[in-house]
Length: 266
Image (cartoon, rainbow, N blue to C red):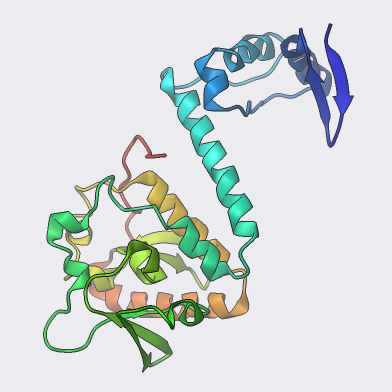
């Protein structure tokens, strides 16, 4: 016999609970239903029992893709939930952004092996580095092997060309994309950074080399996080203006967007 319990919403547990889900869908008049589950319930074919009943009682939509697609979506949902829980404990948007991009990479493998870590080497004799985002200087001030230099509009971080991945500045984690904030519409897009054209082969071959879809999505998410605070929004607008100036000849920003792999890496 199924038991009914009311918390934030209605929950069922016990024998026959799956059948009650379909009745709830019908009673609420739902046309589109999202079933949230986890990989184990899919593996043992428990969650898959929900779908036939939902469709039979009027839940619209259809199952798309192969057998592994629901499992892939469940893994991504679990990962997103855990990321949000961790991010809520962090005090600043830049900390959250750094965490979200900790293990996200443009390619499934280390893209630095393709170009010999070209983005970590200076071009010519001039000192080079990455511009820090607002609030990031305090996080990296005591990092060994890194030097902070005053620069126009902020702080420049200079390293010896090698660092621990956990210590990378946010600009390195975003590379070769950037969350472009459109001043007219307020929309944030993940675009190829034209300033990386001479350095990164992924930018030069952007029409042929697909990026990891999860990485592109996370770049957009990071942009929205940073834009929530006035200082971060102002920084994104300044960077967007610089991107517009450099992109006047390449026109990377006007293209449809980064080419993504069809199967996202979870």
